[in-house]
Image (cartoon, rainbow, N blue to C red; front, side, top):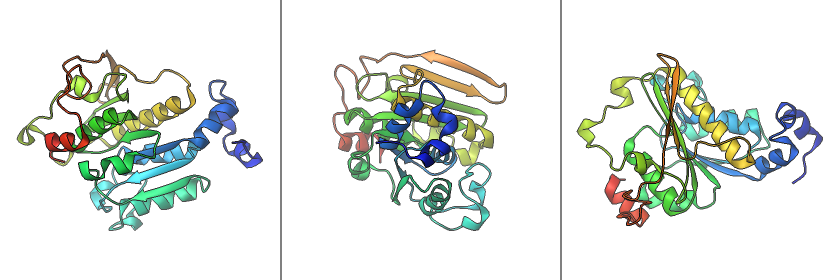
Length: 265
């Protein structure tokens, strides 16, 4: 896939980076990425991936834009209130880069929809705000051998890691089981410091670009913890756990249906 003169002008600042160059830009143009969630994390991920020239972007979200979203979900605006998030995001991304093929999936990510949604995409991005979907995404990507870029935020804190399904440490290697629902504090209850969504979402977009182009060192077998209150970052080295219920030596989760039962998704 050769670059046009328009491509060379649009991506000029990216093309001069030696680790990306024309070859990397062509890889981006040929890549397909599914972003599950068009909210706080999904906003910067989608905007930066479209700006970078990812060839095909899928957007999964079944929600509509609410006023309380706008403090951190910057892909939406006041004029979008009440609209499906996939439609609002589609319009902003189309205006930003009309060369990107955009696909809207106005549905919830569940065990019933997981395999069909993931099948045709190279890289998957977790941009959800609930634990059942987070665990299900991890399990499905491990089982389908997909690359998953994970991100999570709460209050001033954010986490990020990248998972090569079946090859590197997965989310369940760190958190084997979801906590009981009554033990979980939601973002609505605890709050989210808006810029944290931008920080982690930008890290996730960076991870996708690195995975696709081969530039840099993705967060494989590493968990990055960002504390925006103290403005510190901590990196935790990870390894695959033999007791992991989905990627371990004797997994108890061997199908997406079973993953759905374990997560209630």
